[in-house]
Amino acid sequence: MNSITITISLPPKACRPNGAHGHWAAKASSKKQYRSEAWAATAAEIKGQPPRWHKARVEIKAYFKTARHLDPDNLVASLKSAFDGIADAGVIANDKGLWPERPVIDKDAKNPRIELTITEEP
Image (tube, rainbow, N blue to C red; front, side, top):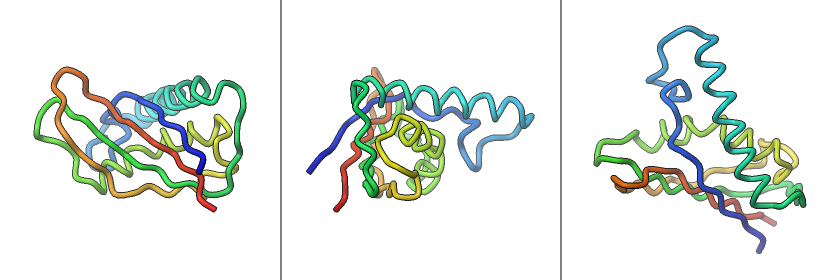
């Protein structure tokens, strides 16, 4: 089975469904930057060879600075811009075919991050 793993920063507050209050333009800019970050990480991993899978699942590992963190549903919703960036890089033909698994959430005070493993589904 084919898979790739990328590491990106934690989603900004503007990407959170319950934590983003502010001007729409600031939220849009933040989401665009996060999408670009995911695209760049994915493009670097696939080295210009987009697989264009039809269906794939995404395993999410989130590492926060503290034990306080987003609940799993909000975390997945916060990653929508990242999933769009993965689709932009050509890993999947359409992001409708990208299915997130229930995230694993842990603490890493020194290196907070999101690790996404995208695996082709038959």
